[in-house]
Image (tube, rainbow, N blue to C red):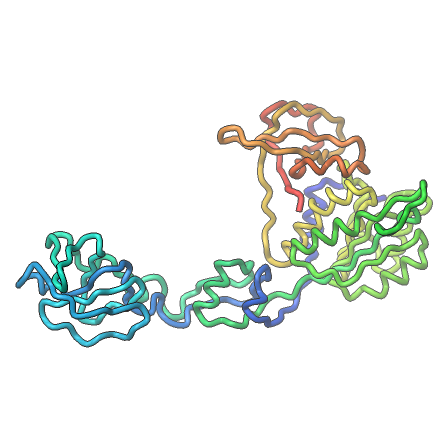
Amino acid sequence: MNPLITPDAAEAVTLAHLPVLGTEEIPLEEAHGRVLASELRADRPLPPYDRVMMDGICFRKADLEESPSLTIAGDHPAGASGPDPLAPGHCWEVMTGACLPSDCDTVLPYEQITRQGSSISFPPETAIQGRFIHEESSDHATGDLLVSSHTLIDSRVAAVAATVGATTLKVLQRPRVAIFTTGDEVVEPDASPAPHQVRQSNAASLRAALAVLGAELIHHQHLPDDPDAITSAVREHLDSDLLLLCGGISKGKYDFVRPVIESLLGVPAFHGVAQRPGKPLAFWSGPPPVFALPGNPMSVQVTFHRYVRPFLEALQNQSTVVRTVSLASEIRFDPPFACSLPVTLRQEGATLLADPAPLSNSGDFASAIESDGFIELPADHKVFPPGSLAPFRPWL
């Protein structure tokens, strides 16, 4: 392994080597969760007409100078084109969303009027010109930018796209990821393991996390601890956007991942991070970029969430949200490694408290089920008293 670097330095190295994703066009109804590759602009004024905002009546305020009451001329519902001009002293019964007739300037809701047959009366002071009218182009003019490129398409963006007639959207292609798990002791989940074997869990974990992050898993293969087999399998997928390997990256006699990837892509950008768990983590800038994660399940969880998640989010021009929490109790550990510790969260007033949920070792991933995520404590202190602040990252 190379000299150890800090977690922040490791993250900076990985984020400095993002590949460029291509684009594709897809139907709007298939676009939820994808990332826009072009802007959305208003194709006409918004709103496109003076829009009535309340069910009630509309009229010319000037007509009130001759009579405090008005006569209903008829209905003007939403979706109808502009009606004929009103006769003096008349009003339209109007519905929310209707276009305001061109000769009207005042709207009164039903709650403010009294009706007797076709005659309408109300206190004159309640008639305020322009009130309850959503004026044409008051939100946006034609050509205004509504949604920036590289925005994640959610329900709000989908609504804007539909509003401007963007039924086909240009989006970033999904990052294409290949996973290689390693280890002669590992068997598939549907197997009956011998006493000296364990079932494969890392692939299931990574597959689920990749789906949440919008990545496309194009290949998964479990490999034996054999350099020729690893070389052959990895070489076939060097056209991926990202390679993830689990296990075989430490200093053991049967750890072949580093020499194999080194033979294909040269020396790693780093190998070894001053952290627990996950110290053996390695990264190649590629192409394609390669994360070689340790094999222990908890190390996989922590290193994926700490480094691969922000890499994939940045690749799609999304930011990783890291919250700050307050320690509910004292935590002690020995430097010189940063400590990633599972925690459960609870709210106390305005403070979000983190209760440690320590594991017995980096293979004890089942005990992390009750935790909400993990905090990272730096290596420059031995004691972190209650109230100390720490960055928190949730599990996917």
